[in-house]
Length: 343
Image 1 (cartoon, one colour):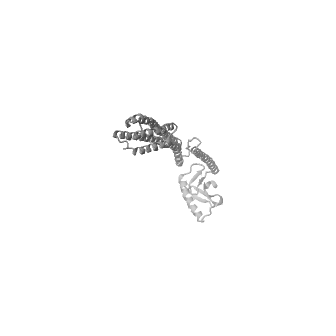
Image 2 (cartoon, rainbow, N blue to C red):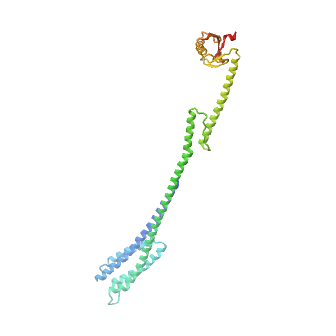
Image 3 (cartoon, rainbow, N blue to C red):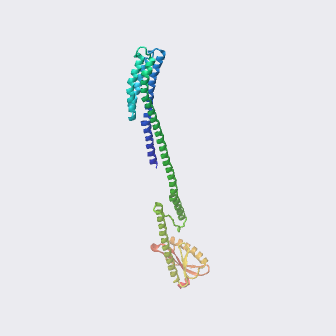
């Protein structure tokens, strides 16, 4: 739309400039030229009448040729600027010029019958010649002025049309920006906000949340990938929980093999699982303290790790505690069983 507006504006301004330069300026100059022709003719008529009235026909004789020189200059400009319709008028002016000059000279020279006055010669000879040259000059002026008005109207119409076109383009651009903003809000900003809330929920630990973004754009694909990642994580956690439950049941089954039950503790002495009845919490706490002491003793090398720990609980019960090792002699925990069960 910006490119279209710029191109349309450039085209309209170029058309207006063409109308101004080629038509309005041309017809304005033609009108001035036709006006100059009329002024030159009327100036010669005025000078001739003034000489007749004053009775001195030689008073303006020097100025008349100069006025006619201006007439011929204006006529030359009119010929150079005339169009097809104006060339006929210019030709009529050129034809009437010779008769006009001859009639003017006859008035100045009193080339008439004896007893005839200059005023009579003016009325019978010069006035008709003046009318014949003035008529095409006035017609040329009227036509040039009308052409100038038409060119001015064309410039005004082009400027109005260009303004309307640019206004429509600007309005369309504004409406398009509004539509684009609404579309961006609906299809981008709101979806980004939903994706942000979804990410914050996942970061807060709500792994059961899912993004509900549809479509084929990048945001929908990102949401789909995140949902798939969460689904894979949930599946892995489910398998892991099943495996842990299975291992826990296996441990309980192993501990159930002890007739009087047994306790399984971590390396720090925390109770992991047991078999038999629920153990006395006092025994568990005291056993955790004793296991921590034995850990330090084993770490310092004072006690072999495979040597069982004979221990008596707070209630007087006897326990045998075994240090459990995984591969590479890595500590795995403690197994405590009543000493009587082994006996």
